[in-house]
Length: 428
Image (cartoon, rainbow, N blue to C red; front, side, top):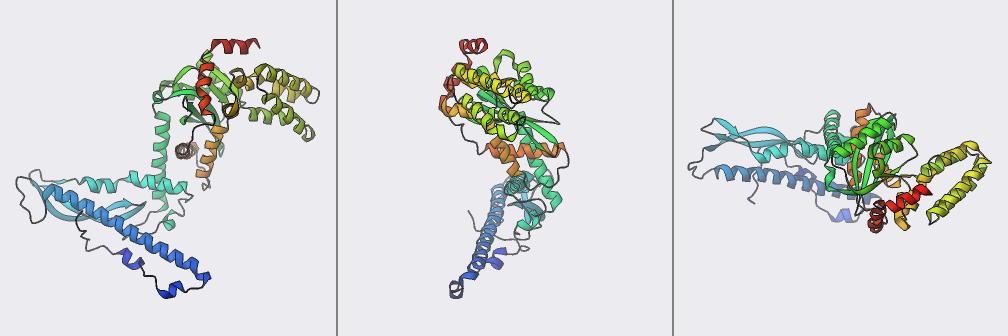
C-alpha cells in the first residue's frame, strides 16, 4: 500500500491524544493508577481511529490510481480524468466523519464517475450495524452521542439519527427472519411461545434441526396467543418450505389455542408435548401454599418416571389426590395431562427428555431479548416491539448452541415416524 497523503483540512486527532509514558507516571500513587489507565486507553484508541481513517483515504486513493493512474502518468485512451475534490460524509465506527473525496470525471460522457470505495464508506448499512451492536452492549439512543469518542472532524450522531439507524437495522433483521427459506433445514422439533412488552404479545416459533441446532423460524404480533395468530404463523412456516421427516414434535405452553392451531394446521403430522413447568405452575395457582410443596413433589415424581405407562398411572393418582383438596387444581392437571407425557410415549430419555419437556430452550432466547432491550424506557407501539424482538432474536441466535442431548435426536426422529408408538399412546 502506498504512503498516505492527508487532506489539508483534516486535523490529526492522534497528535492530540498520544502521549509518552514518563517516569513520573510510573511513580504515581495507587489512587491515580485508574486515571492513568484511562488516559492510556484513550491514547491507544485515538491512534487506532487515526489509523482506520488513514486506511480509508488510502483505499480511495488506490481506486483513483487504478482508474486514471498517477497524476503525472500518461492518460492513454482512458476517458476518465481527475477533477479536483469535494467534501462528503462517510461512516466509521458508528460516527459520521467529514471526508474529502477525490473526483473523477468521464470527459466523453460529461458525468462524474462513482467511486465504489467512497460509496461503501458512505453506506448506512454499516452505520446501522454499528448502532445495533452498541445497543446490544447496553448503550441507549440518549447516551449514544456521548458514548462515541470523536474521530478526526467527527460530526457526531444525534438521537434521532441513531434511532433511525437502529430502526432500519432491526427491521431488516425482522424481515430476514420472517422471510427466510426454511427448506434448507430438516426439523424434528418446533417450540412455540410468546414474549410480551407493554401489552403487545409476540408469538415466536423456534425449530430444532435433526442435528440439534436451534433456529428462529418466525414471529408475529398479537394481543394474545389466540388461535388465529398462531395459525397465521404456522401457515407462514409452511409457505416458506418448512421441512421435516415424518411427524413433527411441537413443544407448547399450556395455551389451548396454541394446541388447537397446531392440530388444525398439521393434523396427524403433529405430536404435542405440553410444557411441564407451565402445567405445574397452573395447578399450583389453585392450591393454598401449604399444599403446593406436596403437589409439586408428586407431579415431578410422575414426570420423572421412565416408562409412559408408569408415569400415566402416577399422574392419574395425583389427579385423584388433588380432587380431595381442590377440584379446580385437579381439573387443571387433568386437562390435556397426557400431552405432558408425549416424550415418555416416544421413549426419549436422558438429557434430551429434560430439554423437550419444557419450553426452556425458547425461554432462554427470550431472556436474550430482554437483556437486549433492557434500556428501552417507553414502548411506543407494536411495530417498535416487533423490531426489538426480531433484532434481539437475531442476536440471541448467533449464540445458540446445539440442544442438550442432541445425539439422541435420530432416535427421536425414528420414534416420530413410528405408527406403532403413536397407536400405543392413544390406546393407553
